[in-house]
Image (cartoon, rainbow, N blue to C red; front, side, top):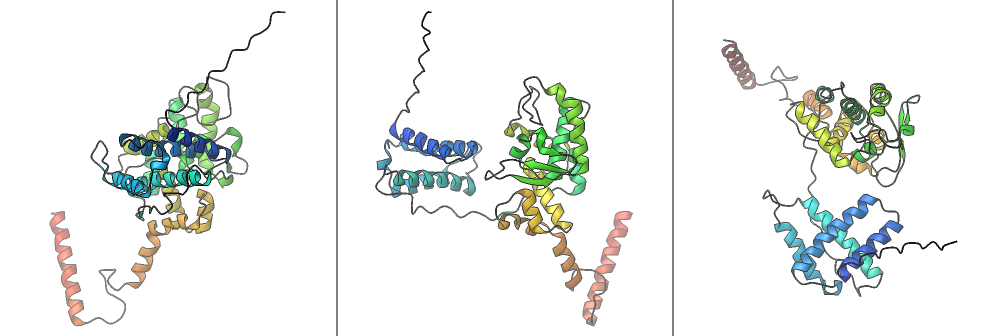
Length: 353
């Protein structure tokens, strides 16, 4: 019999310099430690920005990187301007520096460096901001109604929007949802390997289940063109949906609804948490629902939910209403309030005329 000659494997192209090689070793180490592919990608990209900056300044080895060099890079991030002239947010600056600190910590532990030059690098203080937009229940319904259910893609989109609104899932959790994760009998969804590689069960509403069932029976078979791996939401090419595409899809429906608000997948997540809190849900239930590792993350929505604060303010603050206050009032107060009420009445008559 003739000998079968196996083709020689193609050699892996070596990185162009030692710094890139060390980044790849670091990424490989993170993979062994079971970090998620997204974390690996983010580290490679963010550290890559620093390597590009170093190359422009002829810094070719990690031993040349000192704390003053890192502080210069931090200032460069602060003064950097994007194509539209906007600066990098402090959150973006902090993320790039945090990944860089992790790489240098690993370099020192692996004895590629005698000491860690990034150990005392201070990260920028982050703003404690609230979500810019929250949908009311009526606005959420208006956004969901924009999907055209006459087409397979439109029915899929309706099921996606219903799922977001019913569960508050992250976009990656929706993208990775499998058919066997939906338990219609129990009214639950199993989220596998969510953020932090944690599984969790969450409830899902009857209406969302009905739209999911309709989509799976009627529209999904028309989108399926390759072997079926059980992914619930498919692209028009029959593949798993891209998360960036999903964000653009949801954003387009929010814009189409003309409600004067902007946002994508996370807008529904904020909305679910806020509406549940305003309707009396315990904050720890919301924490479990959203999959937050820390209760402090969920406590953000106690500041977004204004209804309870308004109720207490209305019931306790003397100046909350135009009508008579409980308790004694001076003659001057009564006269001033009567004058104000008369002025308002005149303005209403003018508007009616």
